Length: 306
Image 1 (cartoon, rainbow, N blue to C red):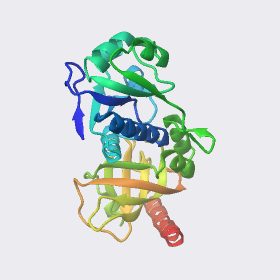
Image 2: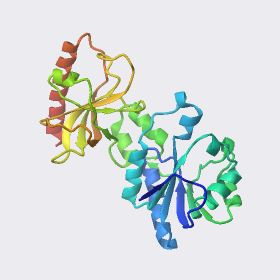
Image 3: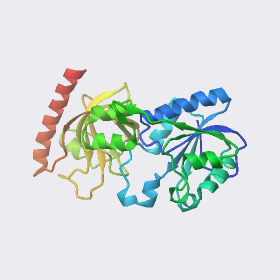
Image 4: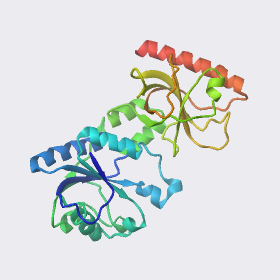
């Protein structure tokens, strides 16, 4: 898959295109990608996706933006897995935000990425002040045809990034899994921590998080990307209130029956079951005793669930 960040100037290569934030790449997004691949094959065009970085809501109101379900890297990995040939990563900045709906159609879609067929959601909005909608897109487009994707429902609920965030915030991992079509996961590179876990007898793989995640607490997890295949473990997601006061989010994973050096390795942590909320303990000894119970509970979970 080719990743392209330039949206102007034209590549000369016509594409079939779908547009969106694709946060989480949930089942609604997956249906769009499947339709894109089918249409691109029928039309003899490379299937392409346009996504935005950062999320527009992070640009306009960073303090009030919702937690991200997926990083850009995770989205790109999923696009590639679905067969997307080109991903246009549109930098959402003041220039892009200032384009009128008509300018977005002409400068970006027609003269920029050379779209010949465009798929959007039925609630798609674009252009300065979100002035453009599906009807305006169809009326303005001269060089491409437009198709709208109907809403995808899961158990009577609209599949959306908002619904997935709500499920995760409420610790409803089963609902999140149904909406995503897979277990929720966080990916990142293992970095050096302060070695507190090792000092307590629980060495952890630490993944720094740039933003607060959509879920917090202590979980049973499956870890991918390790030597020898997936491993089971216990993960803590949050701000570690017992040992830190800086409020920076961190993902820490203790893997059962595993003690290898994996600094720098990219791992994916798949969340299976919540054990408890994050808590502040009176001292590190009390924290260590709770960690012993967490590991025992995790082993019991995996013994029951495989």
